[in-house]
Amino acid sequence: MTEDYFSVEKLLERDIPNTLTDIYQIQSNTSDRSVKILEIGKFKKEEVPIVPILHMKLGTFFCEMMSYTISDDELINDSCLKMIGFLIQIDKKIIASLDFVFCPNEQKLERKKKSNNINGFFQIVLTRRKQGNNVASIIKTFQEYPGREESVHLLATTLIEDVIKII
Image 1 (cartoon, one colour):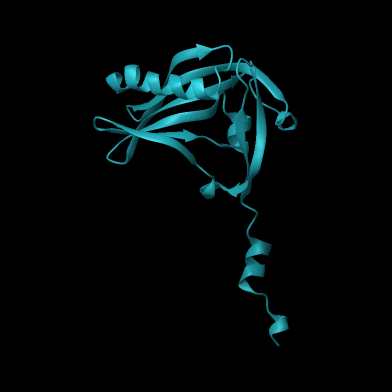
Image 2: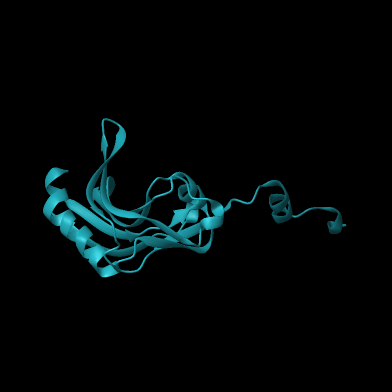
């Protein structure tokens, strides 16, 4: 008699659309002007992995460096793609971010180009809330990728020497 009924799991599989999204990471080699976009898996949007690299306390600020992952929507729609960055917090509330981003020369990336070398340039960008809006300020621009260790060093130095003073 139980063969005549659907299980809850089967109903959910049948009636709820697949909510998995492809997740990517942006990678480059030292002195390159291009990046590779690597697919790292499929995740539910609310379960996208965040990879902490380091954290530090600067006065009243708690700053946590993250390695970002990029969703399909971000890959296709964002003008610049985050690689790594600091989330700057006060009392566990994010007040700003300082990010190392890649800006492709092409306005929109086509799906078929996700794994190819994409040409562009790199920036350090400060994003903070002003009057209810996110406002991005370009701090530095690089024509070539400075390298993994150097980009971490540049972000940390910019955070300590420039950004904390103006937030």
